[in-house]
Image (cartoon, rainbow, N blue to C red; front, side):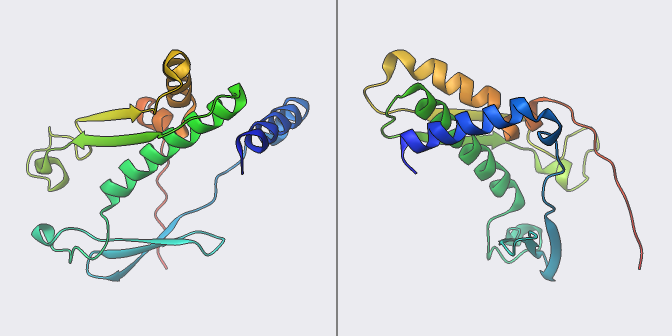
Length: 169
């Protein structure tokens, strides 16, 4: 889809949801993880899409697929890139060479349960955005807007309630 079609789709979605706010909130599709072999996990969605994860050999995986942590960073970087692109299209700005990198700093003592005071997840994250020439003046506004409206960024920054259900068969 080109810039104009993206902008048109966003305008249409905004107009519709402004008129039908009761349809704006919904439960997202389920991701179901099933162990295939060892620490190799296949995650599927209701539409049949799937992704496989695995852990490194140092913790018992086979290293045959990306780790869940890497997919988390991949989701973050792709979400930010998507929202920046959406905003640029809305503003009629042609983005060239957009690249979003996300990395994090972790301490394996947390995930391995060695030190309970050490978080299992990342201690910090870094988002680096590179935008090609031609958008210097608007780049900061578009990038900051994209970050503020990225659902993955929001989930990282805002404590969200998690309800655990354990079912036995």
